[in-house]
Amino acid sequence: MTMVCDVVALSRYLDGELPPEQYRAVAEHVVACAPCRAELTALREINRLMVDWGSRNVPLPIDAANRTRAEIGRRARFPRLLALSRASSAAVGTAAAALLLMVTMNLAPLYQSISASPPPRVQTRTPELQQITERYQLKHNLESMLIHSPPPVWPVQRRHTSLPD
Amino acid sequence: MAMVLEAALIEQLRRQEEDAFTLVYERHKTQIFNYLYRLSGDWELAGDLTHDTFLSAYESLPKLRPDSNIAPWLYRIATNRFRDLLRRRRVINWLPWTDGPASEARLAVTGGEETLSERESVKAALASMKPEYSTCLVLRLAEGFSSEETGAILGISAEAVRMRLSRARVMFKAAYEIAESGEHDDGL
Image (cartoon, rainbow over all chains, first blue to last red; front, side, top):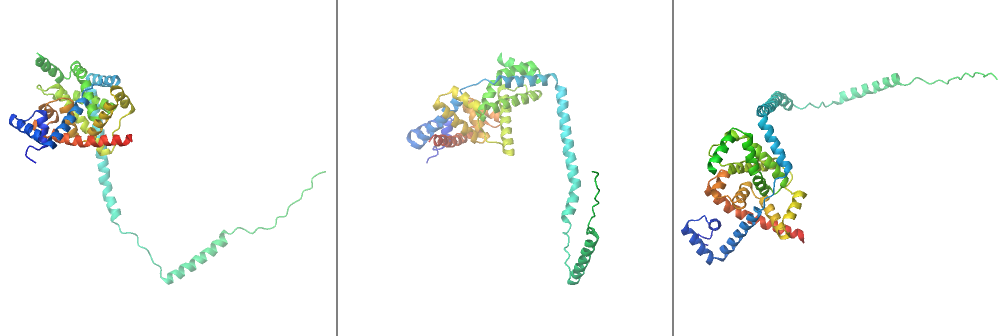
């Protein structure tokens, strides 16, 4: 690999953007070096592909052109109104951002205090307390059964009325 | 004479005169539309980007320098709109670039089988490249701008264009080979 075996030099050689001395040196090198010759062929192929890619011009669709013409006309006729509307929308956006910032800043200490507070403690019952609770629960259940139980249902005597014949 | 007319046109443009801008639009719309198609590979998208390009150009008329050249100025705006689009797509992870049936039909009309396959591969290869390289390749080789003109459009030096073009060719070659092998695999 010599100094001339270099893709940058080959690229410049292809574009004719080398000083005459370097140009001659690269040309001589390419004759002797098969990999550089292959590389140069590949670079020429890229040039051909790109020239082909740039060779066709398609007109801009009419509806797209009309849209732009209309918008330019509108901006030319109402420059102050548009500038004002842009300024007002920018002002609304800034106000909304400021409001959001203020709300966030006000909520931040509250959130920090909530997240910093210790978790609720879990009370463990002692055996004595457990007994008292169970006793109380039993009593309460009995009372509620008495209070809320439905009234006794007595046998209902049906009064038969005799229909006139 | 042409220089004087161009200077007069630019003066009118700087005053945002509608007629002057309409003249610029009618002169350059097809050129910019085709450039954006060559970059994006999508007719519909190229139409939308052309619309955005000329509206951006209209808005920036007061900032147009008296010594500006109109075509490179429009190409610069079009390139920026294309880059913005890619950036937005990367951020919101949009759908992959595909061609609609309209573009398929149009290509089928304009080219034979061989050319169609070749162009599809060119399109796929360009779409897979980073925009700084694909724009350089398209401006320099497909649009036919010199290194100096390409540099003016991209905002880099002519020397940087030569370096970038060399790398772009290497990248294109690899991407084109992948695209071609993909097409042949599909055909099996």
